[in-house]
Length: 320
Image (cartoon, rainbow, N blue to C red; front, side, top):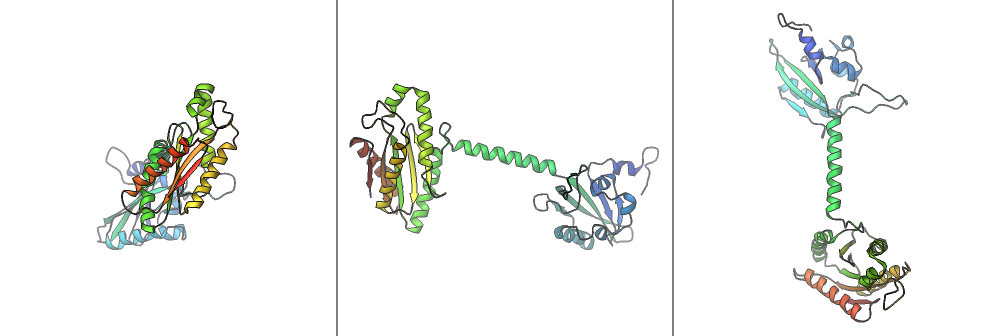
């Protein structure tokens, strides 16, 4: 196909310098145009493609969605756009540099546009444009990865690496709604490191940060279900939310939390209850019903923690 613009250049020169594939098919799907981009990425030379049947050429390697769109374009004159999001690799096209390890190369990620063209005899032809969307997909993945990282930063405590209060508040609302629907229990644990200010004053803030991290990791490791919520609530205080527990089981779990921190055997010479780091825990278990129950659950667990601290610390106080 070699038409000239008078005194200027051949149309083939234009087609073959395009940075996308260009294919023209007649009403019987025979190939009328096959530019150099298609030669490079299909590994089918122009002499092997021109006048060949497009569908037969690829021998059942075409995606079903592509074939449907092609049939509609030629038969009914319907233009079509196949995005890389829904039709990732409809044609067997590959990048120039293929792997040498004997493995089958991965298809290029493609975007395809089909345009019906009415011929002089009234029959329809189809112009197909194919673009390499691989870099766009890579950019989208990078942006998505960055977006997910930013989301994690927003709900993650910068020091301890556990979730922060914002994360807890968002998930607490959802947990309350689910518990009300299922008429199931929620257990809320308020946890405070005993005499942490005295620890900081005696050992220094660097040591204090290290201990916060150790305690946070230890408490997080006690969780057994991915639906459990744990967060740093502020300062040396942590909060935990578990579903489906009875009152006695919640109290036993709170004792398990207290034992796990004591087992760290972290020296604390300024503690008035032990010579190692300890925690106090207040826990409330109930089945929330009304809108106010969320506030009441928090207030009751906080009051239980206050009673544990008032009663000498290194204690668990559980209430319904």
